[in-house]
Length: 238
Image (tube, rainbow, N blue to C red; front, side, top):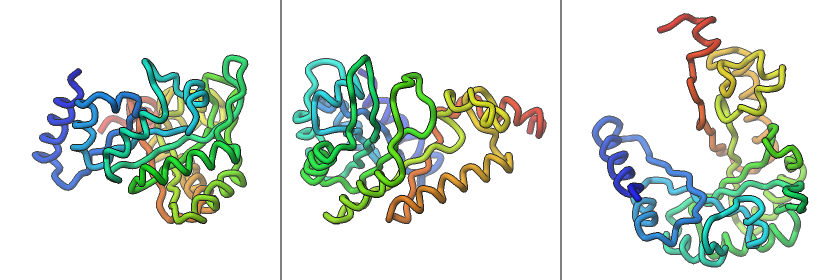
């Protein structure tokens, strides 16, 4: 209920302390039917709104939206932004609760593209799984398949911008020894570690080879306690 006032406070702080910064909000977009939510998102520089499928059944498996949600209603609300939004989509496949989920099929991608054309966003961001998740039966989409989706989009003049994670959002990955050795905390990689820098450069290189665009969205969310683990042991407190 306080979302709009929180956005107002955030923008006021930005204007006072870092006026050149952009305010971006990532939303699952399932509450766009609420006027206060739409008003708040209209105020930010980048409203990044999720749209993972054109089919209700797929969205129910992937996102578990609450209430009387339909993709059709969500798309109509997204069209009210008149292009001043960014659509973000995660491509994956696998099984969840015994049901097959796959939003990479030709039927899925074609239907998704038609909706994106209706929405006409200023950008489209995409990503897939490249780390372990709590649901072990989900699978990442391989680079060749992402290239096919990118080519499909390019054929209608749509630029896809890949999203990557850098230091944070890695709780499951860091359970593996190869990542644990370069971690800061149990969820964050160690900033400034040469091996971490090498890893991030490899990720960026892979994305550059997979997508036509020369732009990459670099994520740094969920970097809990950054600098308060192994970083302090190796560098001291400063």
